Length: 115
Length: 112
Image 1 (tube, rainbow over the protein chains, first blue to last red):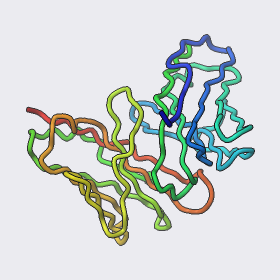
Image 2: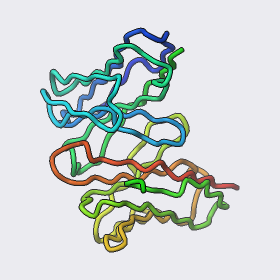
Image 3: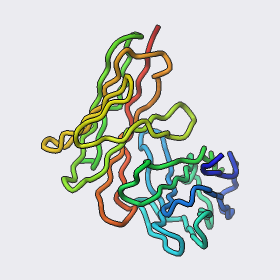
Image 4: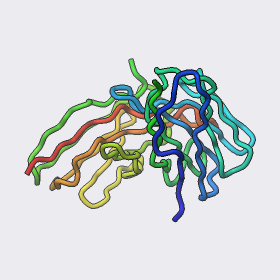
């Protein structure tokens, strides 16, 4: 089934630890995104990639890094987790960044709790 | 002012009612518009794109008003299964993904 796979589904992480959230898509979409969703704040863009080999900063990039070595994978790394990074993280993709014909497709999310 | 604003609701309406809500945006250069639906603890899913001429998909109608800079979503003959949060998405055009803005969502609750 075509779509986006995120792993893990949920995680409890000790503050100060490093963690990588995985995201893989099989739709050959050019653009990929990482969002965090917090109650009352909606979806906020962390990092994005318009195409393989390029990345950019979104609205809330501090404390996070990404890489886009190929079309399918877009991992998000928290170098040293802090409690304020407790959130639900969604990976998304689209055929093009700005005017996607079919909108944006989301993964099922990773619930991260930093203690 | 937020770039994209939605009434958070909740809208609590009886089954069978018609309900509508708007989403306003501040960037007049915005080019693409979408409505997404998000169920509790699930990922957002595309409900419909919003075209300049307006578009309809079954019980759902989306409209774009560029002059007043808002999009709307109308749901007719509402069903219990329509209960969800509805997010609007606005993109500013260009080649970068940095100008894709999600509204905070409008909660809709349909009661029997």
